[in-house]
Length: 451
Image 1 (cartoon, rainbow, N blue to C red):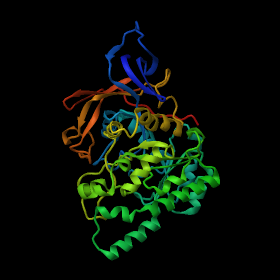
Image 2: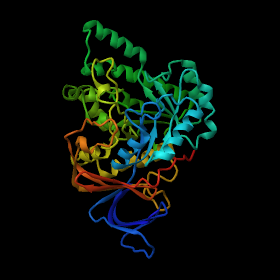
Image 3: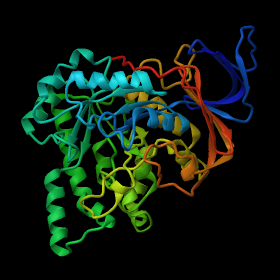
């Protein structure tokens, strides 16, 4: 492994932006100070004018392997992730087969160990029938990011609507419980009412089927269970103004038992975009009207919401075609999530320090990830070097997703990811002119948790 010395770089970390030299040695951050030099052999990178951020930690992605590899693999999507500045991810269990046993979960870890350029962890899946298997993971709380419960429709056997199963997991799980919260009975009633009024639905009907009531009914139920049993609950991809009141902003993050996530697509798109993008932005929970986006931004910045993620969920273009009932939900995002946030930074809506806090610091604190999420001496050297003077045009030719499309095609983002470091290894270099250079000689590492 090479050692690296980044010279005269603006370090964005723990609420400050300071010009420093940064030395990565044997996969760790050895030193961060202004102007020092070293005698040891290292690759020197003159980074004057560029910004060094902790690598993003995405707590919700769907990389589709095993079983759905026609649209994504851990290898392809981790390449896209590091090209976008994401150095660690936590992946969801609704693959094929669903990751509902410890053995199936470990198969995913084995795949990632051989093919992932980013660091990785995987959620244990739940069903109405596997509570015993889920609770057997308690002794492994330092090795697995959490338990995922789909409290709304999902792939295979993963809709958990048995209340006794939910009560048991919330009362007995020692792992963080992450939930997808949409109430199936509300969704079904909405769908039937819309179909009765007009038999053929389109993409713009999606936020009417999966509406505010479906989200709030489910999220409030999850919160009530967590409060009853003092569970560690993390609600994923909040999409409505109504849900903001379920979360507190008067406690430090590490003192919260109930935390939340907002995703980049809910911060960016609104229901008005269905006319232009149609089923390309169909996702669960649905993208809703502009009043929700405004409320989500406010709640993010005032700390009702704790972290930003992507819910990266690629499908082939053929799978995104009508009719409504067959068009799959989900969109690919992980290659451009940081660039999208830099767009909003340029507009003055969010500072670089806030981007770092919500995409790195807070994720590490929320999940208690060991030695990551901050640029600190002794920590793993996961970092992204950003050039704010450059720009990035999203074109089909430059996409790294296996599905081969993006809702941002044609967009020009301010800024560019210049380099990405994972465990001190420079895994990605942006050579300009749309050229990506990867070092695939060293794979990412399994995440561990200080619980």
